[in-house]
Image (cartoon, each protein chain N blue to C red):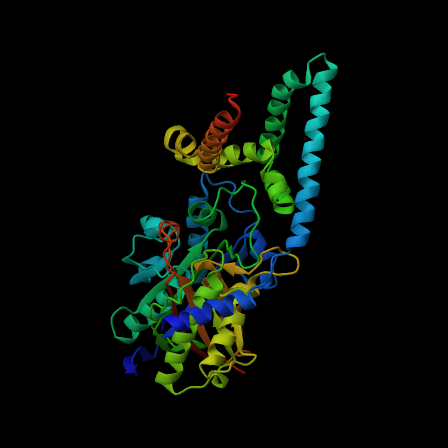
Length: 339
Length: 148
C-alpha cells in the first residue's frame, strides 16, 4: 500500500483493487446497446415509489446491494462510503446513509462525481487508512428534469445538443485484496471554464475540462493515449466528443479509436431520441460498474482510463448569465485477468 | 486566454449539429393548424346549438383547455409539442399543458408549496408579459384612435 505523487495532480496508487461492482439502470438504459451488461434493469422509472427522489435512492440501494454481493462483503465490513449524486444537498447518497449507517463522506462534482469517488477511495486505501471502501454515484432522469429543466409533462423541443440524464446507479467496492481489476493511478481535475453558457450544450462546455485532465494525466505519468485500450469520458456525448477531438488536436494531442464516451454509448442515438446522449453521475457510474468492469474482469480490455466529466452549474447561475465551469477526474485501471 | 475562449465558442457554433428548422416550421404549421381546425369544429358545434360566433368562443376555449389538460394528464401532450413545437405550445391547449404539467410534477411537495406555489412556473411569465403587452398595445390604440 502506497501513494506516490506524480507531477502536479496525479497519484500512483498500489494495491487497490475493485472487489465488486453493481450497476442498476432504468428501462430506457436497459433497452440501449449496453442493456445486457447491467446487473438489474428496472421495468419502469420507479412508479411504485411515492416520489422519484425515493426511486433514485432505491436504485442506488440496489446498486450497493449488487456490489456488496459480488465483493462478498456486508455493510458491516465497509469502513467508509464515498459517493454523490446530482440532487440538491446530495440527498440520494445522504438519505441512503440512514439505511446503511456506515461512515459516509458525501461528494459532489456533478456528473464527474463517480471518478471523484473512485479516486478518493483509492487514495484512502493506498494511504493505509480504511481497508474496504464503497464508492458510488446515481442519477434519475425524472428528478434531474424537475431540478434542472421543466416538469416532465411540459411539452417542449430539446435541442440537438441536449443531454438525457440517465436513470442509473453504479457502486464499486474497493479494497486491498488482489482481484483482476486494479486501480493504478488517478488525476484530480481542475475547474476549466471555456465560456459556455448554454445548459443545453454541456458537451462542448465540458470537453476542455476533459482535455485538461487527460493531458495532465499523460504528462504526469509519461503515458500516451495508445497505452490504453479505451479512454472513456463521462458524458460529453456525440457533440462533446467531436469538440474534444478538435480541441485536443489544436493542443497537439491526437486521439484514435480508443476514445469513447459513457453517455454516447448508453443509448442508441438512431432509435432512442436521446439527442447528445446520456448524462448524469449515474451514467459513467453504471457504464463502468456494468460493461466496462466486465470487460476488465474478463481481460478483454487491458487498460482503461475513465474520465468522468461534470458541469458545475446550477439553475440559478445560468439564469444569472454565468458561464459554466466544468471539471473532470481521471482514474486509470488495469486488468490482471486472463487476456 | 479570452481569445482562446472566443475561438472555442466560435468552433462550437461552427461544429454544432444544426436544428432541422425547415422541418420544425412545417410540423409547427401542421400541428398548430390541426389544433385550430379542431377548435373551429368545436366552435361550429356550439354555433349549431344557437350561439353567436362570439358567444361560442368562450365554451370553445373551455373545451380546448379541457382537451389540452386531458392529453397532458395522459402523458401525450408533451409528444404533441415535441413534434409540433410552437404549433403545440401557442394554442390554448399549450397553455393548459403549461398549467397542468407543473401541477402534476409538484404534487409531491403538497397543495400549498407544491401545486399552489409552482402552478404558474411556466405560465406565469406568459401571463405577466402578455398582459403588459396588451396594456401597451391598447394604450397606443387609444392614443391613436380614441377607442378604448
